[in-house]
Length: 417
Image (cartoon, rainbow, N blue to C red; front, top):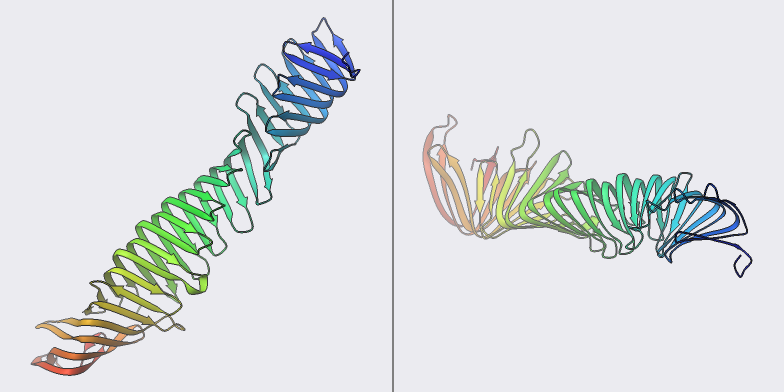
C-alpha cells in the first residue's frame, strides 16, 4: 500500500496503483480495479477504471475512461492495449488525442512511444480553431506537431480548402507540403500542381510542375511549371512555359511569356507578361486569327485594353503591323476586338503576288468589325505603296502616295482602297 491507501505494484520498471488488485503469482498476472494508474518512467502514464497486466509478455490492457498521457499529448479512449516490449499502445474502438493546438480523433489508433508517433486509421479528423483535417490515414508526431496524410485528404478553413492524396502538414507552424493530385481552392481561384507548398499565416502557396491556376469568376486559366499565389494580395506569379487562357464568349485569348503575373480583384484582373511575350486570339469559325509578339504585354480586363510593349509585331489576318508600342482595345460588352492603336514608327505590310502593300506613318489607328480589321488610318508623315488590280485580279498600277494622313479600307483583311 502507498501513503494514499492504494495498492502499489512494481514490475521491471513499471509502477501500478489501484484501489483493488488481484495478483496471480503463478501466472505473473495482475487484475487492477478502481483509479488504476500505470506509469513507465517519467514519460508515459495510463489511467483507467480497470486494467490487466501480464508480466510474462509485458502486455497491458486497460478499459473504462482510459487516459494515456505523454509529454506533448493526451489520449482518451474506452479500451487501450499497451505492449511494453514494442513500446506501442493501440485502440480499435475510437479515440481522441489532444495537444496544445488541435484535437485528433479516429476509429483506430496506435501510439509508438519511442518515436513519439501516432498512427491513425479510419475516419481520422483534426479539429483546430483555424481549420479541420479529414483523412483516411494520418501519422502524427507529438513532439513536432507534424501530420502526414495518406489517401483522399482535405484541410478546410474559412478561406481555403486543400485536397491531396499524400502530404504533410505542420499543425503548429501552419505550413504544409502536398503531392499526388494536390490542389488548393481559394474560393475564386483553384491551384493545381504536382507538388504544392502552403503557408496559412502568409496566405501563400507555391506549386511546382504541371501547374494550373483556374480563375472561376473570370473563366481564365494559367498554366506553367512554377507558380506562387498570394491570396490576400490577389496575386499570381507563374513561370516556366507560362500561358494564360481567357475565355471570351465562344473564343479564347492565349498569352504566353517567360513570366506571367496576374493581380487585382476578380472584377479588375490585370495580366502582365514579361520577356518573349506572345498573344493569340483564335477567332470564330469564319474569322481569321489575330496574334502578336513583343518583349512585354499588359492586359487590363476591366478596361478591355491590351498593350504590346517593346518591339511589338501584330498580325491580323494577312496584315502585319509594327511600331514602338501597340494597343488593342476590346468592346467590353461583347469582348470583340474594337480598336487598334500603333504609336510611333507605325508600319503595316500586306503581301501581294507582285510585292507588298505597305503603309507607314507616325501613328496608326485601326477599326475592327466582327474581329476583322476593316479600316486603317495613318496619321502624320504618312506614305503608302499599293498595288492596284482590276476585277479580274490583274495588276493595273502601283500607287505611291505621301500625305499628312491616309485612310485605307479592307475587305476580308485585304486592302481595297
